[in-house]
Amino acid sequence: MKIKSFTEKQSRAFTYFLITILSITLLLSLNGLVVSYSIPDKIVEEIVIATVAQKIDLNYVVFVKSSIIYDNRTVLKPGETIYTKFFEGLNITHELKLSSSKELQNVGGTYEVYVNISSPIWFKEILVDSGDVRELLRTRSLYLNFTYLRDYISRVEREVGSSRAYTIVIVFRARTDVKLVNVSKSYTLTSTSKLEVYYDTGKPFIDVRVSSPESKYVDSYKQTRVAEVALLWVSVDIITYRVLTVITSITSAGGLAIAIIVITRSSSSKRIPALLESKYRDLIITGELEQIRHVAVVIRVKNFTDLVKVATMRRKPIVRLSSKTKFAVVDGDVTYLYEEIDKSTK
Image (cartoon, rainbow, N blue to C red; front, top):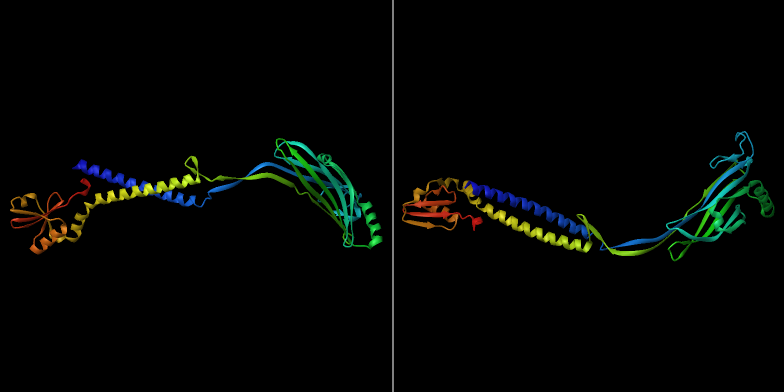
């Protein structure tokens, strides 16, 4: 009996363990199924063939007259205050910075440099330099003579009228044709950098600003592929993943149902004794098998409820025998017997 009891306990423990594993598996598979439908079936990727970028890099120094305010220096760095009274000119260095994702095979094109002078009532554009864009691949210099520009502005204003504020913009423009190694087509980029000088006769300062934006071209095409999901250490496509999660959900749900049925049936043999103790405590006594050994008739009842009816009608106690699964009502020579059947042994 002890061996049988130990075996039953082990079986029940394994069943509960199996229910736990199947429940976790079911939850994970259902969660994976729901998540998989939040992922698009196909993903559009951008495949880059080549990338080309360029900018005209500008830098400058300021030339001023020797003065106490500047400690007798005649050259200022960018960011220092420029007083109009001492301002003589700018030396602007410029260079074309060209980069690409592949090796350069050929570079061509042209560049121009303009000086644009404007006021609220007039505008003048002057071409001061031009040539092959390859010349800009090394550092070049351009000097802006402010004394000459003020004289030029004075001559124009004698013709059209005077103003108070002026803007001098030095524009560097490059149009570059690029051919890369192992790429069949060529690319054309256009870049414009500016150095702007703001001059107001009513203010003692000169304001200088530099703008050097980068021009970039990305040659690419779009490619569509089936989405993939990581499953353990393997990547599977989203369709296969959904099928696997459906199969796993159905299988684990079925296994869980079977395990619950098994554990429910195995527990059913304990339901009636528990019911007896709680509901029919006053009708039950415990006895030995010898008490019903000499009887004339033994009537086997099919369920415990009928046995309770007999005990109530005949005003007799229900005898629980030592096996704890047999119950009897003794009425003279007639014994009514109910035996609980262990369904798990069928």
